[in-house]
Length: 440
Image (cartoon, rainbow, N blue to C red; front, side):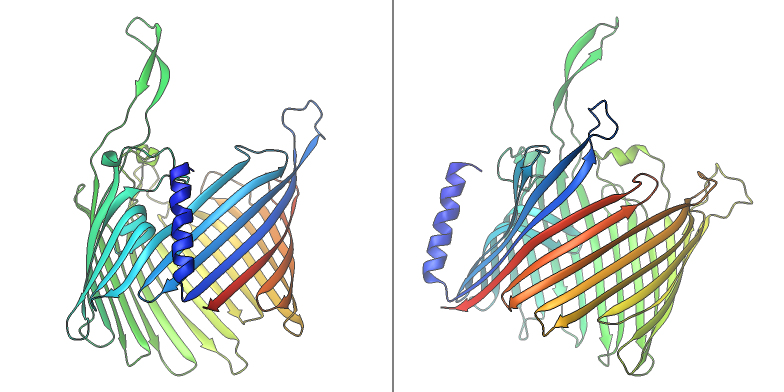
């Protein structure tokens, strides 16, 4: 991080800390250990041991209508360096003003954008104006530089080639109704690089490979309506303005038949959507539609039993024979409870076959101070027509949490994985979490 940015960050912390009315702090520190075979060694049994630490920081200072918010992560190699050895990421780092002049919200800094078609992390400004007697008309406007892929603050690409701005208008004028229109304009240009290429007489010469392309322009509509506080309808449609195509549409209805029984139906249309410079754009892809529905029923003891059936309809592939089905079916059933649950899933059809079972269990062992958890997942699958025989995959975890006080906890967890790539893979995680909220 640049020294000037560090000084600015420290000054903001001191300024807000001295004048804060409330402080919210969450800190997690975990260490993750594993062994792996050393591919550079001549001995097949040679292994290297690795221990990597992760720290997560959430810090919020609030003073009246203003707040300072940050969410960051650091990570480092304790035993045997992997990659750079140390890295940091800032997912959020912004100042927020709420309900200024009774109509305006302001966010300045690094922030996550969730505004219809506008999604991503940017370093910039976000304004929201709330108008009307009941603030039923809300207009958001945002813009700034796209955050680097590594979420650091150095090595910024050119802003004119890496930016994101957009707007969203939302309406809340009818009880239990929300409708919004959104627009997003985003451009991310990959960094140039040098390599060797053959010229017209096949001599190798060094060339600089640069990228360029149009900005991605998207427009969208979202509608959500709740009837009698128990029936819900949601729909959205997203359109690519530059390519002139509808790339996603969705509608779902959830109905409460009686206090214990609920039903739902969903429809989703998808066309794979990639940015202009994405490597995935070179592959052949087709549209698909998904239709699904199901029921869930809650017993008096709190157990929720559910079942779901869905079918994915793929656009016809001219390379396959007419007798081959071009759809896939998903069947899922199970039950859930705050302390345990079981789910059985089956896929069949064009995308392959798979049978899977997953289960979880958690229990308070001693008076909210010691709790245990476990999970297990098994799958027997085959991918499309590329494979003849099915293969197995098994994974699970077992963990214990010790909480001597509500604000502090210690976690210990073991994980294992067995599949056709890893004959056996066992890993361990240990760490602690601390939470503080205080009025000053």
